[in-house]
View 1 (cartoon, rainbow, N blue to C red):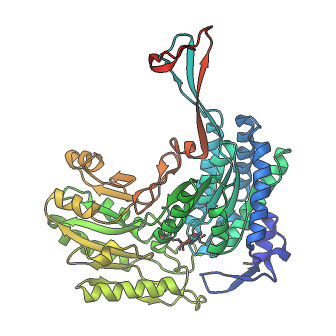
View 2: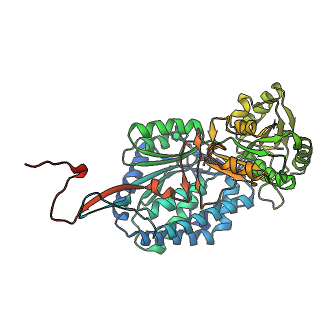
View 3: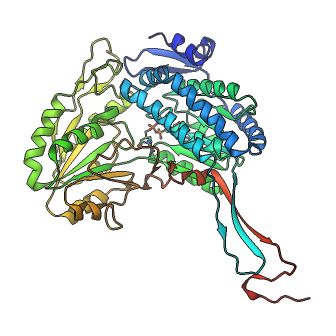
Length: 499
Ligand code: NAD
């Protein structure tokens, strides 16, 4: 795959990919793809300046017209779906099907946002005063800062940006330093949509490249009223606190430690397929990856051998090849972290199947592993921690309350699921006393969310919501208006205040 040729198809010239200070390597085989330039603090501030100027113009454009730009972006993505999916695979190591799926998610959110551009509704409110009317107006917010993680290098941007644009905002995006080329490609595709649109202001999307120091500039700039940050809980703790200090708003989409409860009545053939996709998809590097399996004692001895067999049959290899189900980890650090977790699990009495490094022909500098199943005697500190790789810890339970306590007994609160044919269990699981996560599913695994729902989680996952439902409100400011159309001036609460 010639990376220069691929990037040219998006409109990114070769010169942008050479002589920079940030080497970009493919996790597939460790090959150097490009050397791109990062932004320093002054350049990042200049990008915020341009985005702020763009916002001042864009907020005046009627929302349905703003939707037209996002419609054009969706169409551009449709045309370039295969190329962008391929680039995502090259840069993150996720299999091509998942790379294409990520682009589809971008297209879907564009469609959603186009509809939304005619539905930014506010309430009318009954006033207690005669001849008065109250209403809510939703106004554009300003420059939205997006900081994204390596594992969804394009979709996270699109989830945020499509809504931000129809809501009348501009965007400054800092992609992960581990997947910057996807950022360049998305910016070039957005530029194509702007050309087709005709009169979009310059600076509507600024992409700044680099590591956390670049993100830091965005986080500290008061002209960025919203920071949407996706990544580790460690990152969110730092970013969230600093944005709050200046009374900015943040959407935090942080780490998960997602579980599935397997009840005695579960359809086990569905469980095996559901668990496999949720636990080993994207080589366990999804925020919603299934990391804990909580299995009822009555089905434990039937299910676990079936799972072991399925794990043994997973095709691990080059993610560009059609029959591969699991590609590489992102880098050696990720590999070492996974091996260290397995070492600790063993010392705590964990019974491990898989987990070893796999040699893939032609990919000697990639880090490939066989996904691991780890039967644990209890939910230790290790199990409560998010290790960002394909490790599935398995725990046993006897009664339903115990299963719910295990499911909720971690600091993260992103996604969760139950496999059961028992209606009481299913309803309890999604009730106020069931799962404490932002996402709670029945008879499907915890990963692979659709864009129609609000996405995000509680506790150490950060509390943010983005994508569907009414998430758009986070990208706008709300004004409450009282309008007096009478010829008197009654005060609220019946207060008399005569001169
Ligand atoms: P990371 O926290 O290392 O980096 C994420 C982004 O934050 C990068 O762009 C990085 O440069 C930036 N960053 C890091 N520290 C920063 C700071 N102090 N100030 C400003 N910017 C900073 O995460 P990662 O390794 O890229 O991604 C994996 C993590 O992301 C996992 O924990 C995963 O669960 C999480 N994740 C969560 C979601 C979600 O929606 N909840 C989605 C994808 C990934």
